[in-house]
Length: 81
Image 1 (cartoon, rainbow, N blue to C red):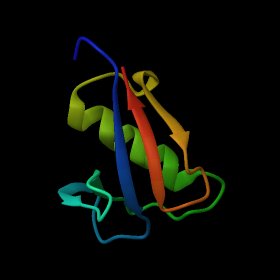
Image 2: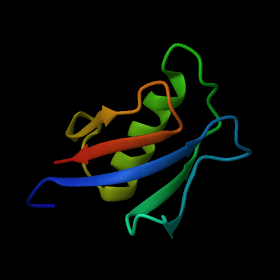
Image 3: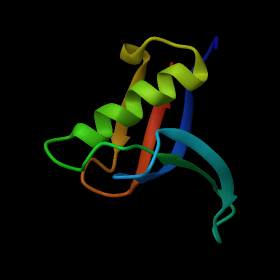
Image 4: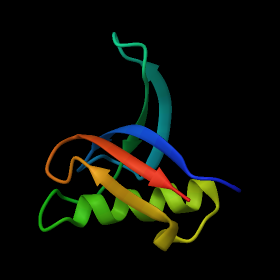
């Protein structure tokens, strides 16, 4: 990736497996990426698992993935450099 990309994410913690799911279309026209992690939503563990998973999916270092909005919400905005 050569430039920054901002994506909307719907995070599901306590899933059966860590995986990046499909993209769904919201009523607003925005696309939202479905992400599932086995981590629990306690002390940011699910957020950290999501960051590691997205970094692996987009083939960047975890330090290049930033949670912009939604630290305590299932709907998140993530920047990938």
